[in-house]
Length: 422
Image 1 (cartoon, rainbow, N blue to C red):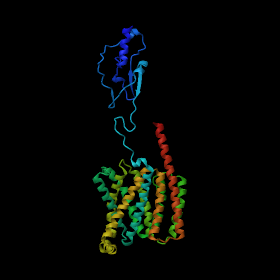
Image 2 (cartoon, rainbow, N blue to C red):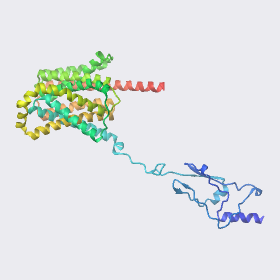
Image 3 (cartoon, rainbow, N blue to C red):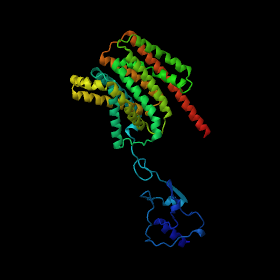
Image 4 (cartoon, rainbow, N blue to C red):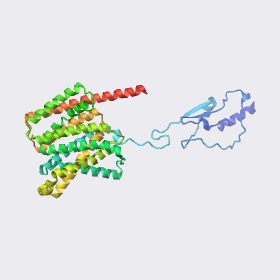
């Protein structure tokens, strides 16, 4: 019996567990399991391997590059046959041991970034409208200025493609056929808007352009065959009433400015219709770039035919004599740059927010433009014109809210239907 006790005492004092095995198959990412043979069995079942006292310990088990060191567990191992050691990963590292990247500023403060996009949208739009009108005060050639707007934007797109921001998407004949009607309507609407800006006050042009939702609703029902809810038609009544009130007493009213703004509304309405028919997998930045290029080609011939002779005779000379060559060229460059940037930022803003938020933001943008133009240019407006403008803007706000809610309900229904079928 003494011979049995001595080996046992020797093994416990030196912490040599000859029956301790670490199988690689038992090591998982969650736990390291150490199994020992039960020492609580009968003495006849005890078996000890003859290990010398100077036996070298085996190489420590490594897990994720760290050696697992076990100390003070002798007593526990004698009492329990299996012990589990949880391995807890560091919170700042991933499974491969690399630190996780911290969140970007946009991910930590999304509301602040979205607010910045709205601010830049309004800021660029207001600056464009004010600078554009100042140019017309000494250079009243809207067809040529429209070409400059598009030309600067096209150069900007070409430079962006050249540096790969964004990468240019290829275009084929089919896409060209689809985008050409969109670009034509975009060119017509843009030129007619500038003709109106040159003929009447900026505030009055934007008041007339508040009728654009009315034309959109009419085209959707009578051209596309879509049923427009009665609530949308009723919301357009104050828009028509407000524009009519503002037009009757507008001090800068003339038929050229009024008719041009109305044609612009119709052109942009058909641009929306053709855009829906020309939906492609191309991203919005590349689509807008191609539309700008085609629209530029459309705008050049009428600018040369209508304003070319006047520009060559005295148009450029008069403008340079009034403000100088450097200011004239810099003004043309900056109005083109602001025109392109505010349209691009408006698209980026739409991608960040819901349609309802964007609709409200678009209405507020028109209010900002009208208000700032009145303050900067000191335009005198009658009381009736002011009331009519407010009524028209309020009607547009109501229309935008109702339409955005209808679109949101439609998307929710389609999503639910797709989920149920899947």
